Length: 130
Image: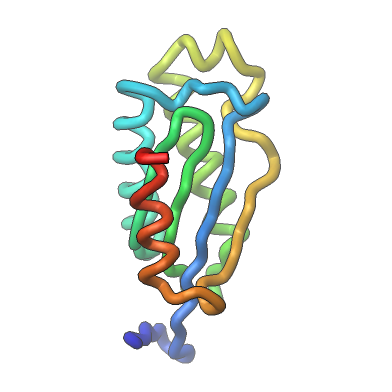
């Protein structure tokens, strides 16, 4: 197992996060899905969050990521959802007309520790094949 560190913490905090568009609408398709993937990668790079695996489904997003415990998973998800919503709604008018806001307020998060990392990674990779 590899550990990361900052000035005063050595850690390995991996999370499986899932969230959906408002009303579970299937709007994450074609150009929107591609742009969302780019935005998540950019934001995570800025925030020093490692994206281990990502899958964009038409009605939800799966993300496996490693987050500094001092930054916090809630803050990371809040930043990603907030910034992607704002940018995608500016760039794609259909999102403004079909939804009052892009994302629901809620999300699912689970630490990766009970199941081996490879199992979670394989689960996310195989989402489109289901």
